[in-house]
Image (cartoon, rainbow, N blue to C red; front, side, top):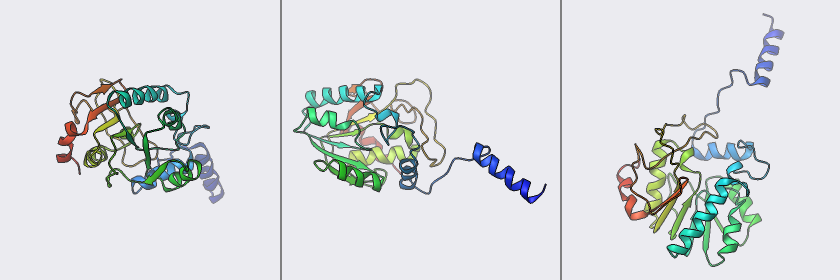
Length: 228
């Protein structure tokens, strides 16, 4: 095969995506920055993907869950982790203007954009698998753990507990199928994750709608022994 034909074949395969391997990243910051800059989750409304569009079922469910637990458990402060591009959260915050809110995300450019767009709220760059957030009554973590490797799930939840939060609400799918591991640090990879079955076996929660589940932090203290 001539050099010209080899180059033509290579270019054609690249354009068609044939044989293309998912891009692997050295750490979570690089991985999620790649997702943000490359619009990996392909939503015209939100950089955080279709699960963060205001008319999505998951957002409607999140608004119901937050309204219920804030009222029942007298929540005064919320740490949103990850906050993403804050596409829908202002709806909740406008309905609850006395809530002390802070949004965390691992992507520097995303936090910078949020600070410009929403100067009335606090934002901070944070890698929850390595850092402990400031204390809040409730840590709200929508669509995070399903994007993490198992070791990072343990580390993330452990740091939520270490923060001293009274409650932790996390996406935990009620799917009965076994939990599976993700490929190593690959772009926007995800899977359903049920924290109430093996290998996590979290205890009976205070709130569970099949998508968002809330526990008292003290009931998750056992994760500290499992975190990396």
